[in-house]
Image (cartoon, rainbow over all chains, first blue to last red; front, side):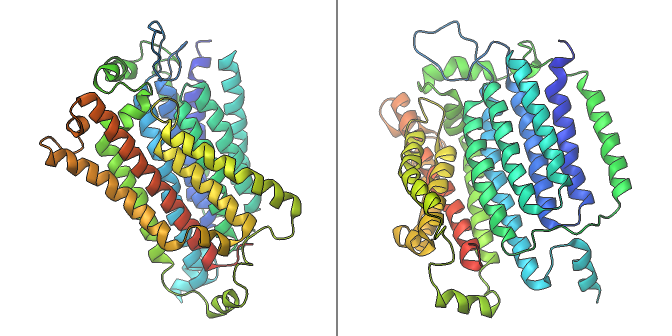
Length: 118
Length: 330
């Protein structure tokens, strides 16, 4: 049970690095953006994990209930906004990818570098 | 039991993430990414983050999938079988994972009430919110009031991303494409002959819209708020576009209106902040907006949440329509 309590953090580390691998090793630009999404999602998981309290509940207060334990609202606020900002930046990235496709006819990093060298 | 369910979900999420990176078919990868988001959303819900789960489900599994597919419509959906410096990357990634996992042994266990992160300002928010703001959802209180500067910044980032996409697509695309668009307006997007999907889609749209509005205006009392509602309403209107075609969607809500929506939301947020200054307090201090400071806080939060919802919805739809108008999404 003691080690199981670290499982979320291990998943965070693994997901973070899966995303990072896609960003550095893949040459397809859309795949890189997907890797970036995975990387982001790993960070979301880390924050939400840290805010959780055993036996706690969502931080929505109820009148007349005084003995409830609430999980920490702050990490949730930070991640809530980060998710929407994340999709906006991903969309911007995809917009750049589409423009690259139109100009270069490819979204593969190697092809693009080759065309640039000519 | 819940912990085991969480472990199960996270294991599935890791497998899905591996599959996303492994597969060469990018459409499959997009679908897997949607499943990954959904798994993560359920896990957030288990970790008491209802607001975050709602956002992740609407954004990650809904809008993100549509945008990725939109981009793939321009490009090839196959990935070339080659990768640069694969072994070096693998070495770096594996060793970093090892270091990160080694570091976790010093972390407090999952759900430990004694963890330092839970001892700092979180309890203060939970205790003082009834006194200063008096709305049940503490997440909304922190988002709208205590950390209003942050949220204003985030709204501007979203706004900037919308402007960025418009800017990128402002130069004309290949000519043949724009000619084709003039020949057959409105036929580019839409499920067209897929009767079953069209009928079900039509039925769903009003209910998603209604739910979006509920999430917007009930955000002070339950999970929800501007970010989630903006994403949900955008998702409903994207579904409408897919069912009815872009032309009819733009008749309902023109591109011009969408731009006003995204500008207006950001301006409304900023104006509420300035109103606080004009009435003799600090920027984004809502206490002075009404005679009773608590009522003022409530009023301020409702107004800025409306602004957030407008901007998020406007930006996401503007980006979607920018992609659709550009190319040949079907």
